[in-house]
Structures are given as C-alpha cells and as structure tokens.
Amino acid sequence: MSLGERLEAYLTRTWGQPVRVADLSRIPGGASRETYRFAARVGGETRPLILRRDPPGSLIETDRNLEYLALESFHDKLPAPRPVAMDAEGAELERPFFVMERVEGGTAASPFTVLPYGEHARAVGESFFQILGTIAAADPAGLPLAQAAPAPTREDCWRVALDQWSDVIETDEQHPQPIVRAAIRALRRKPPPRATAVRVVHGDYRTGNFLHDGAGKILAILDWEMVHLGDPLEDLAWAIDPLWGHFDAANVAGMIPRADALAIWSRTSGLPVDEAALSWWSLFAAVKGQAIWTSAAKEYRDGGFKEPILAVSGWYTARRHDEILAAMLLRLEGLRALEGLS
Amino acid sequence: MTPSLPDVLVGNFLCMMDPGPPEQQGEFMAGKVAIVAILSLLAAQETERGVAARVAENIAIRAVLDEAAADYGLDATSLPSTEGLTFSVLDQVNAGLRKALIDLHEAIEARGDTTRHHEILYLYARMAELRRLDLPPLPGR
Image 1 (tube, rainbow over the protein chains, first blue to last red):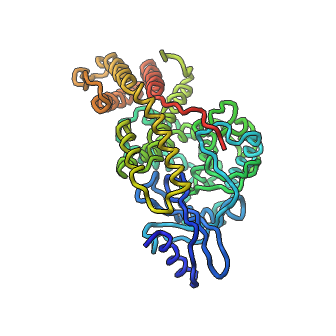
Image 2: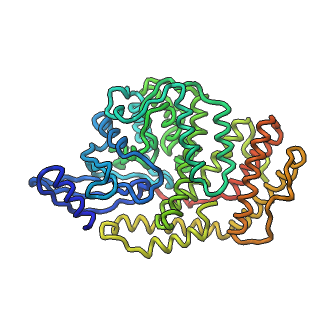
Image 3: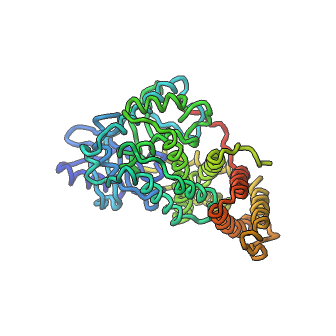
C-alpha cells in the first residue's frame, strides 16, 4: 500500500466515513519528522491537512504526544495549527504520526539566508517575541500539555535540561568534542539562579520554525516536537542564539535589537529577564544545539548517509556552534575573542 | 569530525540515486537538490582546507599537551601521531589528541590553573576557526 492509501484507511476508520486523500506531497525540512501536505475529501468537503510522521531515523528523539498536546494547548491562544488526530503506535501508517490542520499562504525562512524578512523584519520580530512571551505567560496547570509533560521544580529546571542534553552528547558523540564538554563543565560549575517560574518551553522556538505572510504577519508557530516544561528563559536564549541571527550582528533572530526583543518578551510574559540567568541559558542553548547536531551526525551515519539535511546539521551547524561556544567560553572568562588567534 | 568529507560525498550520491515514491518528488525533491548543492559547496571548502586544518589542529593540541606534560603527569610519548595526510588517518590521530586534551583540561580546571585554562580556551577558538565552513549570502525569500 502507498502512504496515501494507508492514510485513507486510517482516516476512514477514525472518522467513520469514507475519506479520499489527494495531493499528498512531502514538504522539505523537518529533520525530526517527515512532513506531508494533503487534502482529505470527506462528506463532500475538502480539508487541507498536514501529516507529521516519525521517520525511520530522526534528528532527535521526541514525543509526538507532547507535540500534539502542545498544539491542543495553544492553537486557540496564538497562531498555531489545530491538531486533528494522532496515533502514537502508528496504526495503518506503521510509524507514529499526527495530523493537523494546514495553515495556508505562509512561508518559513531558511535560517541560513540573509535578510529573510526584508522591510518587515521589525514587525515580524515584535510579533515573534510577543508570541514567545505569550507562551511563557501561560499557566501550564490549565493546559492539556500538563497531562503528559513532567514539571521540574524551579530549582531543578537547569539541571534537568543540562542532564538531558549532555547525555545526548555522551551517547551519540562519534568524535571527541572538547569545546562543548568544556562548556558543559562551565555550566555545572556555576548554575543559574532558580527559575522565576516553571512554564511551557516550546523547545525549538526560532527563525525558520514559523510561517509568515511576507508582509510582517506570523501565521503559525510550528515544530513543537521538543516542547516541555521548564525555565522560560531557555526558549528566549535559544531564539536569540547567534546561529539563528541570519548573519545580522545588529539584531537578534535577524529581526530586532536584542534589548527590544527582551523588553517585548518581558512585557508579554510578565516575567523579568535576569541577565545572569539569560547568560547561563545562552551558553546552554549552544550546548543544546551541539547535542542536536551530534545526534544528526550519528543519524546520518546510521541511516546510510541518505538524508542530506542531517549532513548539514551534523557538519555546518555543528561547526558554527563550536565557534559560538568557543567565543562564549572566552567571554565568560573576560577574555577578548581574538586574543591568541594567529 | 563527523560526518567526514567522504561520508558527505558518498551520501550525496546515495540520496540522489534513490528516486523515492511519488509523494517525495516535486517540492521535496527540489529541496533535497538544494541541500545537496549546499553540501557540495561546503565540500569544496573542506577539500581545500580540511587537511591543513587537521594538521594544524593536531600540532596545536600536541603543543599544549607537551607543555603541560611534566606538571600533569602526561606521557607525551604515548600520544598518537602520523605522517599521513588522509582525512581518515588525521582524524584518527585527532581523536586521540582531543581525548587527551579533554582529560588535561579537566585536570587544569580542578587545579585552578587559570593560565593554562585560558590557553586552552584560546586553543578552542583557534580549532573552531580552523574548522570553519562558510555559506555564501543566500538570499531570503
């Protein structure tokens, strides 16, 4: 059976009436999920939908149940697709998947392009950090996500996050990485202040992971596969990591100045930005990135070198993050970045 | 480092050999071709600079290890070395040297040896610079 036929069988069984799948087409990107757009024809109507299916090997091991619950939690509070169906066992599709409504008319920027938002960078940036503040403002206790996402204590947010990603490096590393290991030790030597609140952390909130209309409006926040509860500064630090800066040193995320981004986030979330804590989470963000790229390199090899997006992640982005980490480690010691370089 | 240059070039071949099912043609295939093109561009840089970068990194790490050997009880004569200039041989030696560097750095931090700690941080910056890959300014959409 083709994928389309499998999808038809699943939806027909689930919805209790005949469903025809049309225009099934895989979308580029999405290294941790196979993503397809399709139309479901049912009861005389056509529903534009997205299928997110676990690949045989993925960039990161993630929980599609949490991703689904995150969409349930936020689709009515901010621009995010409405979830439609999920099967953690795979059912007719053989691998775990979920289906969500398709948001039409938007585009996602590649993180490695310059000036992707053009004259609308300011508008996109204000919206981008406002939405992130909205996520951070939500009380997790009242959200569907709380059914499945464990909540760390405020004191333990940093430790849980650092343990998770340092374990990934320990498990997946195929070549010794002294730079990221030095960063992990630095993070453990000087933990951040306890979190001001335990909130929803999107986990991969960055440029390229949302659809925008090309005129300054964000249409949908995507890629919730790493969602969890933790210190909301984790998301903020990830969003402003230099890797996602579109080679624009004057702004964060290729959008707006850092101070503006932090002010918008703080105003919307109702939470302060402690610079010492954000500094810790910024170094952590680069460690987390390096862990993800380390896994990508392993998956690329384990998968027989057939997914080129994993090669980009495990190669180019890994080396960018080594540069970022090395510069951060020097700054932590009050050393100038270029001293000692010949 | 992983993936190696040969891994990437073989991977580019393998991923294009498999046409995939109909739903993976069109936009997805166009995206895959674009990624393969980027990898080819990066591979050109690695071909030009990769061997020299590995040789330079191995020399730089060995210099740090040699300098600290007496103070930290390192047997510098047991460290791997090579006259070879292939990626695989240089990476094999590099792995041994990096492991020794990680151990040394941990010992230096434990002892509070700030001077050497800073020297190693500068070494990291140099290693990252040597391994750097550059993308051209790809235009946004």
